[in-house]
Length: 627
Image: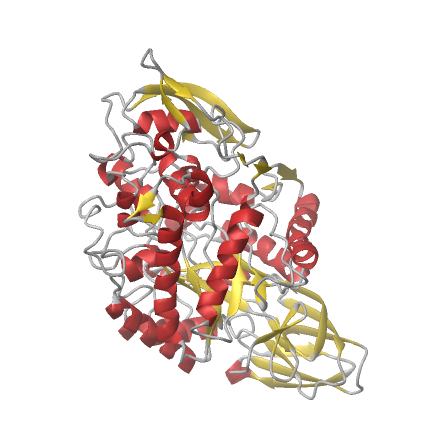
């Protein structure tokens, strides 16, 4: 395994070769406990959040050889390895699950034996399992005064275990704008400014939450400091601004708006036990629109535990007027502080990311820090005083296929704007431009940091799960190929979302009805065949340049013809060959190579091709065909 480091805007090895990292997220079900097994649709045991274990996520140690051998065979030698804050510190503040930490160490040690690098992803979605996502321990909400049993009844969250099946398609992201998650993120990132009267165990809420989160990650980093294949840490998966920056609490905020969607003030009033009619929204290709109203919390249940008041009422945002009606006292409370307009990424995420980097590097000095901001928002401006050796790791999806779980060659979406794109030619161009935007941001905002797409992928339960009934995954292959071509056109490294070892056709990745795994036991017909269980592998498993002795210029793979063309500008100071991954799945009978300006050596047992220029310098072209 070669050394990985950063130089200018590239990942490089010890020879100075440019590395293209073809990675995958491991695993979708790492968001949920293993003991007891608690996929998000199960209510029994849901509230016993202090008595869980994540040992065995992503898979039991005795299954590690099977899965790492498959990932290595498929060319996924760089893992975005999911862990959660809850997995480390579920029992209570400062109470760490060292059994889980030891398990993670053992799993990553096994990954090293397969030549697989990893970076740790402290994963969260909309704060916690108890607010409809994953990540933070349940006790964080309890210390804020919330009673977990009434999160859904009071409109503070929509939770799979409490709602039941069928869980509405892609409704879980709306929790980012509901009271529970929006409050917790406001406390975590900006509690000192926005909730100065709120304390946890005698400590300001912001300091308490950030200190415990980072301490938990440091605990894991300390245990992994001897693992040479652990190259770094992400700061936090998809951080959310919550209420930070909202201009008017009387207006709906955030997108997509789907299902019950109270305004921030309505959400605060509902959580205080006052029934209200709120807007019900739908999301279609033409956009968001309000379609109805519905009475929420008709029984007048309070979210706040005995002895606690609404955090925002306590901090002077709203109150009950003389006539018993709620009244908004500070409509712009979250938008401006002391006359300063708030910017989440710049004012709050950036200081947090610097603190995180500083403390992780006290455990692993050489750690690379991967940063990602709220999806579809620009990166913060990074200066010389900010943490060095960072990687920009934004997420990107084919928005139309993601939201509607439908593939069309003629319709797609812009992940940044949410607007539709029509015709195959326009979609191809739009996808290239959407991804190129990240490279531009890295150059303009982050001093030319390398870009690594932390998540991209497609749902496999497309078209009402038709492929699970007829075995035809051609729509999934087309959707995946379209995304992969955009990644390759921009010469980007990235990690597919995802590989879930316990994926099933019925419950997908075991979390909120999502089904993105490129592997499923339910598609595995021959356990002796390492490829069996793979989905859309004709689009997923692609040749690519692993290490380039120079600067990559052009890459394209035609999955139907199985033709790969790669151009690069050779650097004569590099004394090592260019290496390409050649998946045997695509080329079972071997390959034909056109490389007019150099010599090649093919090692089929290692799925590797080496290229050495006949003359130094210049642009070199390599074309690969089936034999």
